[in-house]
Amino acid sequence: MHILDVEAASERISRHPALGRWLRDAAFDAVEGLRDGAAAAQAQAHGRMERDLKEQFPALAEAVRAATGGCGRPALQWRPLQPRYSRVYLTFEGDHEPDVFCALRQPALSAVRHALQAVAEALPKGAPFAGRPNTATGLFEYDGRCLGVRYREHASEDGGSGAASLRRGVVLLPREGDPTDEHPEGEAARGVVAYFAPQERERWYER
Image 1 (spheres, one colour):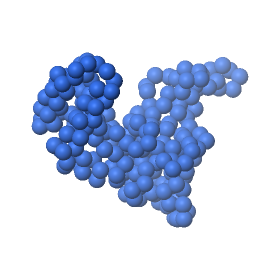
Image 2: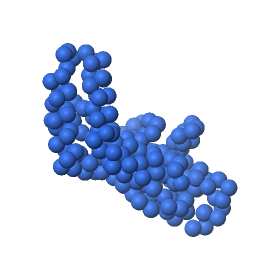
Image 3: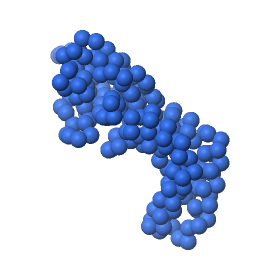
Image 4: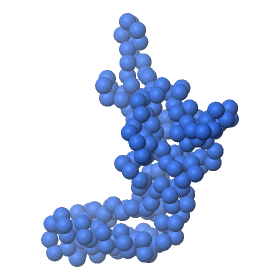
């Protein structure tokens, strides 16, 4: 199993010396080439930079594809008003913006629990407000399929005492379907296993 901190990986990519030089020059050249600040002109300039990124660094795109099972790719965030802060980052299919990516070698219950724990550790450290849960998102890959998982940490009241307590749940975000209802934290791993191995889930539950 391979677990990746997505933000840290994006920062490492942008710090690569050759890519950093290209990004700095391309970001400032694109700004100088703008005749006006119109959104259409900026979109065209951004598109040219993304195409150039793919042409100049094909090995990067292939490495990201291989590491993410085809679920991720490098993308460009260009800041015309502050070009020096432009960056290359990892992006993923669908609307997922994961904090954690995990490539599962096997959809075993023990491995999935370990991956879910990595997502839980990405939750904000402060206590959530009532009605505004803390969230962290993961993206799990197995055999070329990807599944989003969103941890939610809720503030709740403990019985009638009024004392604050925390409750955690997990929503599964399949690419080809609607989000599931929120699973209790202790049951979420079985839902992940059932998604990746529906015909053999009983076998993987034992591992």
